[in-house]
Image 1 (cartoon, helix red, strand yellow):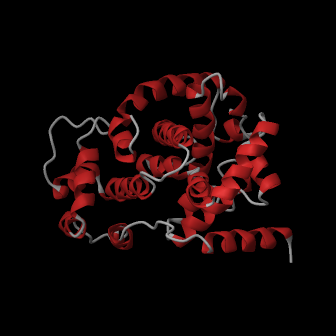
Image 2: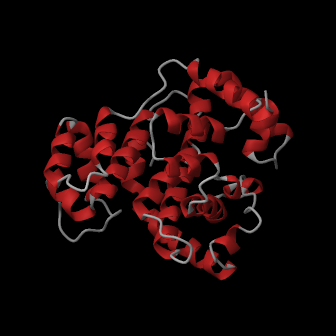
Length: 295
């Protein structure tokens, strides 16, 4: 048995032992099932969302938020589908679902606050990069947003459902203040948040590109698909830290994988410009923050 297989089996066992692990609502899977059908209509998507009134409200709230900056208010899900598009609706449902699934968990509030702020910053930055980086493959901005939001999902799973493991990581952090999170996890647990996230992506039946952006966001060159969205999330993760981490966390910024900027044809000047754009865009995160219970 190879080390990779052994770790994979360990992660599967860990996740299988978690009781009440959240899963996306049925409405997400229903939309994902029909989204690639060229004949699907806005009426059909609206009918699916109508089966989950609470999700319909969230979708309308996000569609009407500063996130899209629409000039007129949208008052029906059908209108939202027509105006922002099917892919955008699917990713809004996924994003709203994830925020809702982990909302209000009784764990370290300081960790949760930092976790969601960084996840949202990475999501917004991924969206910016997807719109700007057209030189090495096209990335859908809404898919990039979801990928950025979910990139560290394994961390919140550990914090919410594996309290002993989370405590070990916190203790190890005191002794290794400058180590990357995944390095501490490997040393302490024998697996990482990326591997937990990878398994969740499979269990939740997320698109393969989204799963790989979660799995390889620290090491994009190791991804089998070589999809540009993985590099987008990798760079966005780094840039979100550079832009928003305060003095207490600046030692955790880390760096980019060698060759990542060159691969996406990004310069240091571009990074500075993207960071400035992120500060502006992040001001639109209020509605998402309300959904997860932070302000």
